[in-house]
Image (cartoon, rainbow, N blue to C red):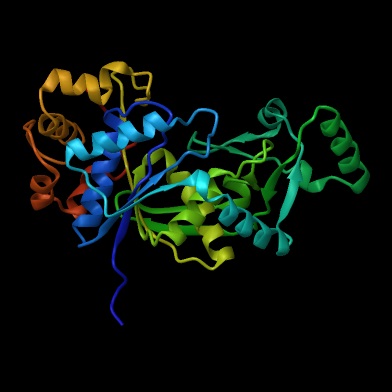
Length: 315
């Protein structure tokens, strides 16, 4: 039996208009999958119901198409996937690995130790160690506030290591570097870690290219994949495009929005070429289509350019 077909993904969050960082992410995902003869799935990650808007999702899709970043399956929407997330959650609960957490955000900040990479805090485990009476008191207090506890997944003293296609070998000891992590939020919504693992498995995604900020989340997702019986994808974490002051590009950076870039550069090809040049996907600042960039794309070369690099200034 041969190797499974490669399937990558675009996974935009429809909470605002697309910016250069989103373009860079989608381009990396498209190139990595297509360079291996693969396909692309489009998934709209709208777990955040309060901030997600249909008009943003529609615009992101139109902008992808204008840039020539076409997908082969989807769009899939996370808001349609609640039953699948609930099923996975119940499987974890049946394993005896899920418990309620009553901590407020302030309490979490007070008890959590900083993560070595500065990306995450390590949960201190307070609610895992509660007595039955202590849990009952906190349950009552939360009920008086009209709130529900969040739900955490117990992690073992286990080190998970993987070879990232861009960043090289990365490892994390779950209990020391992460701690028990959320699988369900206090508002009843499912946490990103659980949703993305369930979605990737259901949609056949086995090639994930995404930003460096999510590197530290990957061991937790690999742990979940093992518990749920899912295969682990190939991962490639590229540097984040940042503003000149070093802050990560966000939807508030209006000058880096796709519409502003299009006005400044004059064509989708020029925008894509500039993003590719800044992101070291091509060696000159010239208009380009995804197909033209694909002709010279080499993941091994990108590993040499990206390994150990957290961010790239965009300008």
